[in-house]
Length: 99
Image (cartoon, rainbow, N blue to C red):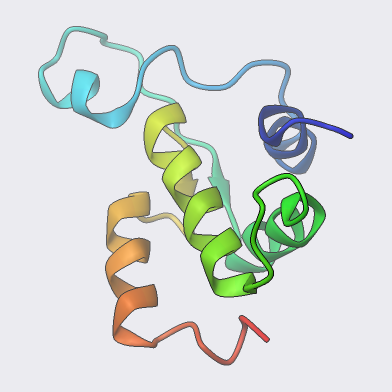
């Protein structure tokens, strides 16, 4: 079974992810920000593949875990920071796509 890192890299078609998470860029410790972005559909695809490993039967929980991975790896989703997407998921904005 592929790791979340491998699946994200495959979807982005990159060899490496960000060198640091978002909070490091905000402190300007790292000058070169990773600008790659996944679509929400790609997040759902990765979550579906990883559900068994995440020990959840709820797709929404798996999606939220995948989005959290993107926070720590500095990957945007829909050209937004993942924490914005997390808030939108909690508000129900993405419920139609999480079925």
